[in-house]
Length: 160
Image (cartoon, rainbow, N blue to C red; front, side):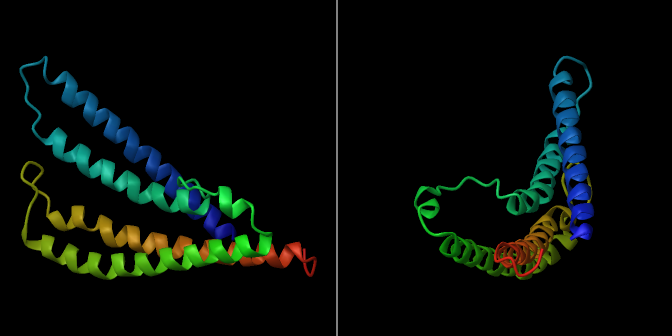
């Protein structure tokens, strides 16, 4: 799992850089209201930076279980049932992410012939966020299940 720590660090750093870029672009957009220069590209770029910052942050939130959830009833269950419940949820996330990946690839293909109005880049770059998110969630869903099963194995005292 050392490789996943490196992937986590890379995604975390990428998320921070994308969000910092988003903040910078929004500040430029705000300041441009007071100067004679009109930066029409800032609204579009800020949208893409926001989407991609979510694409890189969502898998990390999945692994660290930082999504909002109501777990009052789940915590009342025995640990083994909690583990089964969380594994089922992870499998459902993987299945949904696989659908997201497959249809996201098709969606990305639609953007090859279209260009962003102000940035002039192919829309496929913007649409690629969907399959990238699906792929990352699949990987992180599998890693979450593996870590959960290893934790159950370690708790039984069979191996440390």
